[in-house]
Image 1 (tube, rainbow, N blue to C red):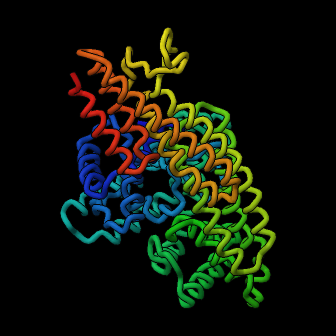
Image 2: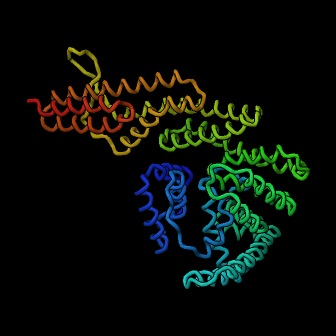
Image 3: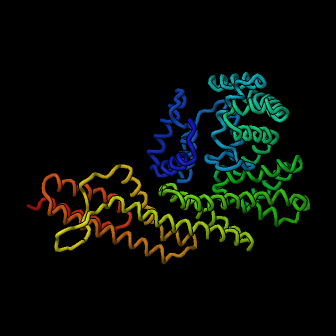
Length: 473
């Protein structure tokens, strides 16, 4: 099952909010469904997001049983991306391409030997037998088979079109070609994975030196392979921006071999800044569309973390050129954030419907309208919008934006919410029967939505007053 980018982002945002215990249970359930052959879920996407979320919170993700498919893709894991929009970039392999690529590897006549090797490896895993010779045989045959497939596609437009059809798109073919290119450096990638443990938050001097040697060995084999070793660090380390420290280590070295490889070394920071600029442009485009508060808030947080991480390395190195590029991206993100906050205020107001007051001593003051129930979608959108507003002052500060304007908007949202809730208490007191129940139900929904904006004492006071009003005769 494949999700479009928007749904994929919303899924990632949702899974990132799950408690650790729930994430572990869901992980086990999804993997069990995948083993049973279930096709109704995007299994790999869910498992990857859950694993990333658990690791980020210091929890050990459940181990996954080895099989031939997982063994084959393991050396390339640091290049996998869950969401890819726009054109393919070097060193980014979409996870959605993995199943189609493996399916072709297991069914195309050019890769029959690989299919037999994979079957033998799976049998060995099941029997708990020695697997290393079988792993080596699978990789050897896969490199030859992928070489034939990619060669035929490059030589013949008809072969290319056929292969694209089997893979489900040009992007998957490009990913297959990149996997083939990376196969020439599988041993180097394994060395790199050993030198830099997964999600390492920092690197020692010994690790920097070992990574330098790995890069130079790969670069000597081919500049392209050397570049891949550096790009792999974006997915290998705790966060991609930590790879910028490796760039400064290499760029500051007096090693003559590194001096000759500066163009290749420079590809690492350029890729990091392409990431940052891409997120900023996504935010810029998103603020012109209907608000998706949950996804926007997650993207804003990721952008701020990315910008802060790059800025810390650049400032330590005294690199004003990179610092200026970061600030330019922050300006774009800050403007988008302000628009998100304005949209969020409108979304929050959707759970506070009003009707004009007529013939009353209150003149034309608006009154809460509880005559029609709110939809579940409206409530969910408003709840996420309120969370965005509550976080807006802090996010504006992280983005270097105008915090005064954002704080004014947040205060306005808080005041409007509190006034509306208190007006609903008055409506509960004045109403009877079904109308009182409807007003009470709306108040409960509103308080659930605006909880991030009010202090717990203020929320408790409103609830107490509503409870008293509900029993008024």
